[in-house]
Length: 156
Image 1 (cartoon, rainbow, N blue to C red):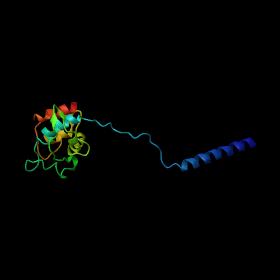
Image 2 (image 1 turned 120 degrees about the vertical axis):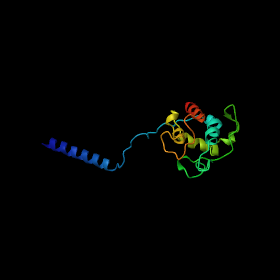
Image 3 (image 1 turned 180 degrees about the horizontal axis):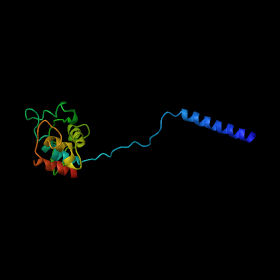
Image 4 (image 1 turned 90 degrees about the vertical axis):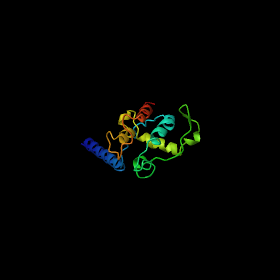
């Protein structure tokens, strides 16, 4: 009988130790943070083709200017007006124009978020064409030549 009592006492002690150890743990480590891989698009192509042809080449806003996205009016896609990036053969020639913290770099970052490898699903295509989303004005038609720059950038 003494062995059964000792075994029962040991089981109770183990249970109490496990309970005490578990009481000190208030969180559970879920493991590594899941992250969606960032799709990077060709920056040179953006600076030399997309930005000059689409961002600066198309007018939007009440008065046909770029006023809507170059202000805080549209917080989802705030852009910065700046001199065009100097390019030769599709490559920027002045690295000081495109470094981190420059207006061109900030525009690349903002527009890349609105881009998709399937350009027809990209907000940068859908919104200004008014295909899916309700943009205040149609900036360009789906048949506009600027769409080719978006399509090419998606495949770069």
